[in-house]
Length: 498
RNA sequence: GGCCCGUUAGUCUAGUGGACAAGGACGCCGCCCUCUCAAGGCGGAGAUCACGGGUUCGAAUCCCGUACGGGCUACCA
Image (cartoon, rainbow, N blue to C red; front, side, top):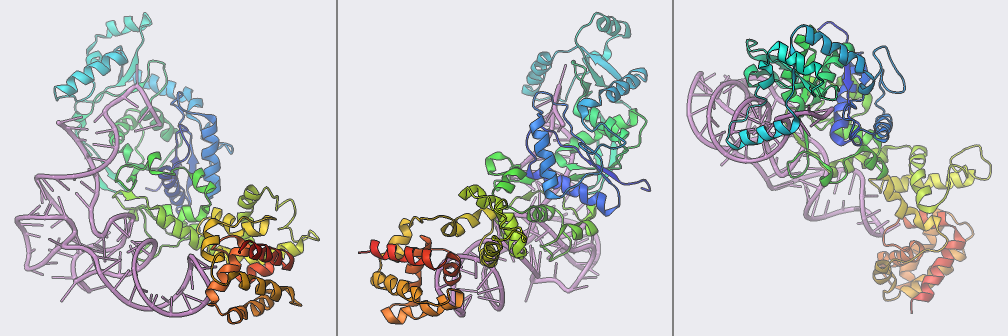
């Protein structure tokens, strides 16, 4: 195939961008980038009932968030626009007209109710095989007069009788054969004059000079119909690559009842776009026998349809989470801070960006910035999702901590903890410097002093200072919290232990 | 019912006729490190390559059948 590579991702805005759709988008994007081709984004919004503008916006922002930039499409335009099917009506009307003159279609006056009824009875008796071609045998004059009288009608494609098998080579699955005579005369234009998916998509793919159609294998049965339409319209078929489904843990196609399925949900629950991209890219494609962490440029350099697996994959949230942790740990402290900022602001009603914590030139905040920066690596290696940062740093952001019940019973209400806490408070109060080393030096002496195991001592202090059983490392945490707040918390906790 | 697709450990995968009594990753288990939780290090369990036939000197790899799973079967996409 010498022609230029042009692929398209054509989501239907009937919902948010879901996991399966994203993977399709990733493969299309990577394929285009790999071959120096174009990645076209087209919105297949022919389902007027369920398509919404909000969904379209959500899809665009999800793609942007993931770094999947398109060369032509909504908001940026392009030579093959418009990129919304609802705005391409003229093309569909013209195509229908051509098929009418070439006698490749015929009007069908059967009502939807009628068809449903027939379908049902035939299926019940075992032998349903699609539309029975009833209107195909209408005489030309009858059809014409019913048309003229304004009788509601759809347009059906005449599946040829002498066409033979439809054969094509799927880039993922290899040779595919569909017997033509098993296909019924499908509707291409509805009675409200709008095109169906099969019709619109073929016309657009022709007009947009799409070279490779990479899509979910739920479209596999549509492919022979579309090939017939390409032929009827005198166009060459593009190459096809059908991706297997992404399944839920029960082996059924991934859906909302399996939990989070939209990109936005993953973003909101603290996933990094690069991690989601990485995970999804490898769900059905592999670089080699051992690579699991792969950045987008490596993906682009190596992506090929040949290495796309043809069997369905079960989506594993645990592996995604692990991978997200890998990416979080890999983030430079500055980046990490920037990424957690929105989550922290949301949780504590702070406005870190506005208070210039992260702006290096804002005097007075420099200190706080540096302070926070110290903490970053300590936290980043402890979380797998950005949202998990919130409980870990809560003790630094609230004036009054609340001691969790478990922390109280398991750490504070232990034999000797009252003495421990008083000793710790005294030791910390007596320090000249209040940095990590000094704090550690002071606190390390406590276990022996009170005759308890280090773990017992430090857990009591941790509970007093953070209110929790789990926190970033104690000495650093205390140094960051500051002497005043630390000592105050420890004394209060001591007082509450009788 | 019809048409189509798929089948390597719980999961994602490597494997394209001999180097595979099957490699990597997640998860799981154990040990080490350790102030908690993580991270990290080391080690381990886990696959009769769905099953049955064939082709071949030789099959996870090719062919056929069966079973199981999935998709489509709409004037949805």
